[in-house]
Image 1 (cartoon, protein in one colour):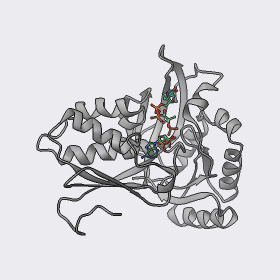
Image 2 (cartoon, protein in one colour):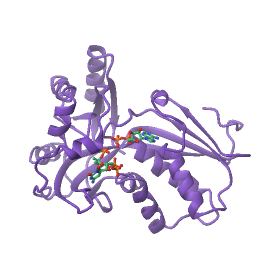
Image 3 (cartoon, rainbow, N blue to C red):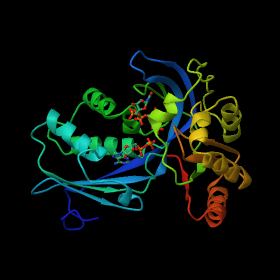
Length: 293
Ligand SMILES: C[C@@](CO)(OP(=O)(O)O)[C@H](O)COP(=O)(O)OP(=O)(O)OC[C@H]1O[C@@H](n2ccc(N)nc2=O)[C@H](O)[C@@H]1O
Ligand SMILES: Nc1ncnc2c1ncn2[C@@H]1O[C@H](COP(=O)(O)OP(=O)(O)O)[C@@H](O)[C@H]1O
């Protein structure tokens, strides 16, 4: 990281941009503008990117971390789109130095870019004397992407509409999981565009205070409707799920529009052991043991 700031500067704001996992995702319709209606249960993980922000003599943006080289530090980066949006709403925002530590694979169904945008909105709004209201933040988030409002919240949610209707989900256990990405970027519009069935039933009701085994039973009654079209585009998704199952996952599935897949494990020790075994068998894959926040 190179923020041009002394380490430990009190003005430095650090925000976690958590990976978003769609535990279940049903497509329930399509709007006139082409966007698809979802019903999805999402959780967020300790695995994520990090946004650091501090007032500066001029606007700066640096990229660091495992996946930094895949991204450009240009105006299309969701971090800068979020900064520019805040400045449009609050022109008094001072020049800021921003660093994105990019630890999540890009275009991978776990909302990394959306989480970065949401973390930037939170960080920069918090630096203002007049922070954005919750309503202003929600509108700003949705204008940056359908996944950004849920990433702004970053706690377990049932999400409907295209991503704007959020209901908190309480009583889920901490979930220990392994994330596996076979290294292939997936185009979200292409996956949505190749869906054949767009009118599916919503998710079944989720009982409150579920134990791990109850949640797995519930998940078996659900689907990710994007998994089949994504697997046609990227056959390695099937291999990632088979590998998670072979490593002992109690349940495995693809998240979002892929290609990242998650496997659920009963505890952290089991998840870490599975991650070690998966990483040694497939050294080119992104493999990460983590847990929900
Ligand atoms: C599929 C999901 C599930 O959480 O996650 P990811 O795979 O991106 O992580 C999201 O709905 C993705 O949200 P996000 O990635 O923010 O999508 P956007 O940038 O707003 O839209 C990218 C494109 O995907 C299609 N799209 C997106 C969302 C939606 N509900 N219906 C759509 O048809 C549209 O073609 C749109 O132009
Ligand atoms: N900071 C960012 N991190 C990741 N992707 C970004 C970022 N800024 C812009 N993008 C673009 O947004 C698209 C979606 O990225 P991402 O959020 O990682 O996908 P997904 O939601 O499928 O995990 C990518 O094609 C990428 O080029």
